[in-house]
Image 1 (spheres, rainbow, N blue to C red):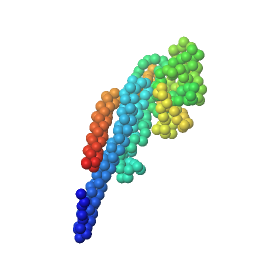
Image 2 (image 1 turned 180 degrees about the horizontal axis):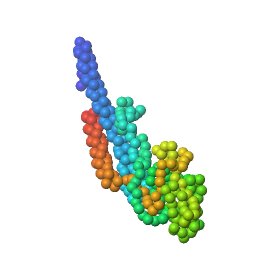
Image 3 (image 1 turned 135 degrees about the vertical axis):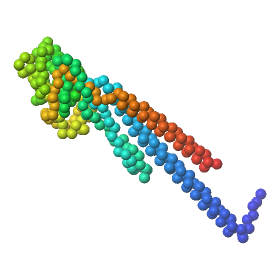
Image 4 (image 1 turned 135 degrees about the horizontal axis):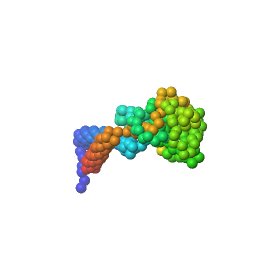
Length: 273
């Protein structure tokens, strides 16, 4: 079958083709804008999910250490509505980092002679095979060599950075508020308490230790309490409530991604037809 187009009809046909091209172009442009908006929505939601997942991990760890002596809970730091370079004008929460909350925990009286709590500012210095670390956990012991150690067998240091020797099998040790240790009236050593110019720069190193490149300086705003331990500053009730809320938000975010993907698939089906 041969289609014969008269020459006088060519201008009308050209106009018709031009109109079809313009309409189809507008249609494709609209679909592309809708698809881009969906991609942006997915990207923002995925970024939000990453931040939520990090906060879930932090909250779960806080809950797990609710009964850990001297534990300091972590807080997630967010920068709200930060522009991403990859997609212009797209703004979303940005998960920057987590920091430790050094709010003091409550003090629990144990009556044990080598349990020591810091009431005020500062940290105990602990000598480990990996260098000197810092902690608020004052549950100390005496090892077989007569040295003051922590729960992990590492040496507790004095204010001059030396190890502390205690006569074996001697529990009649008195520790005053300055950390000076006595047997009767005989001075045997001093438990050092150190502080830093910026405690926010301390980073957790495991086993309830903190590490930093800052130099520890003797603290001035503290008292040591013998027979006490500082409890974790984590509130199980608050952390449990927060965990439930985060799980709900994570579920809503996942459902949103599924819905947007479904809308994209439907758009592509329309284009293909």
